[in-house]
Amino acid sequence: MVNDTSLPSLGIERRVLVVDDEAEIRAFFEDFLAGYQVRAVADGSEVAPLLPVFCPHLVITDLRMPHQGGLSVIRMVKDHDPTTEVLVVTGYGRIDEAVEAMKLGASDFIPKPFEVEQMRAAIEKCFDRIALRRQNAALIHANQELQRLTELKEKFLRLTSHELRGPLTILQGYCDLLSILADSPTDVREAGQAMQTAVSNLTTIVQNLTLLLAATSDQIPITRQSFDVMEVLRTTLEEIKVHAHHRHHEYHLTGPDRMEALGDPLRVTQIARELLFNAVKFTPDHGTIWLELGAVADEHFAIKVQDNGIGMASTEVVSAFESFYETANTQHHSTSRTNFRGGGLGIGLTLVRDIVSAYGGKVGILSEPGQGTTVTVSLPLRYQPPASVKA
Image (cartoon, rainbow, N blue to C red; front, side, top):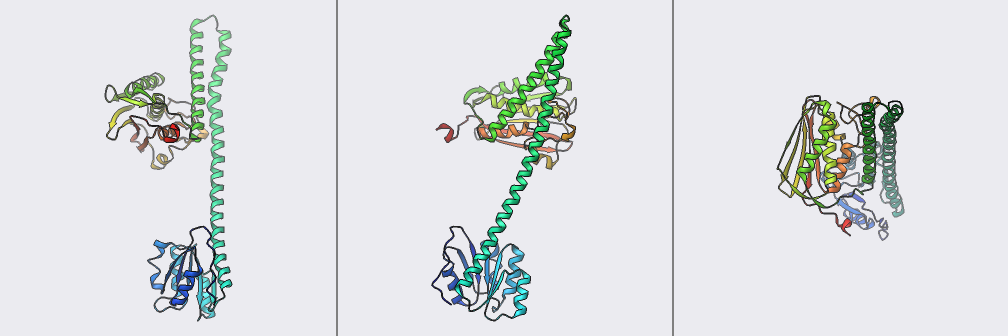
């Protein structure tokens, strides 16, 4: 057996565990596998503690050892990770032992003394299989992601089609009515108000989709100016009350009279608006919605929106921030930001998440079915743009 030829380093961390009671064999592999991470032990009884710590890609084991032999090593390795490759190297192996080793999952059975090129080929073949498994796993993951994106695209097209069709139908209908009802000031005024609402809805849809597109490119702009957070929340809540007056909710706003901050009042408005609209949609008529502003010790302020609505199951909480996610069945989609369980594009909480992330804050949800939902957003009192933005 020649030991002056080593495998070239492949530039990737590759871990090999050698189990052999012959010191000469262990020394050979430590030299031969230069560029690899190699651990060598003298008996199978030393393998179990190493597996969860070293996590070898390949185990090269002798068959006959004083305390615990190679067959036990194969069982331990495969129980720990079935994808770990195992080479059996022995000078005393019998055919039945070779067959048993292969049944247990060994990749190859090499008798001693072996040729260096034979060993090189066996080891390279093991790592080729490892690489192939990883490529297959990557392809499976890519296919799953492609399927998810395809489903997301179809859902997006279905929802946006429905969302845009509603306001456009209203606009078209009232445009037709205006030509007929021109002599009735009351009817004309009501038609104008309905058209204005429809235009407002379309504008909001376009703005939210534009903001979502910016978020996917990590380009949500955050401005830096002085503003009163409480005034922003107070104004936003009054807007929600007007839009959702027919729901007869009870609203409570608590917090300091003023809270000066340095940041983006528009983004804070968007966060509060989306959270309040969500609370309105999922709280039955005559329910209660709380909006709270508080200071946090580490120079942050917290906006909390709480309701006593229908709440969410834990699986829904996990998915709540996903784009185009709706708790209702999208096949029965019904467009409304204010009606109970009204449908939408399903991007409200996604926008909240992305704005909060761009702002350098945090957002969390607590919810239980039938017990309501609480969403808390924490944002810095003094927004600092990332270094890359400053540059």
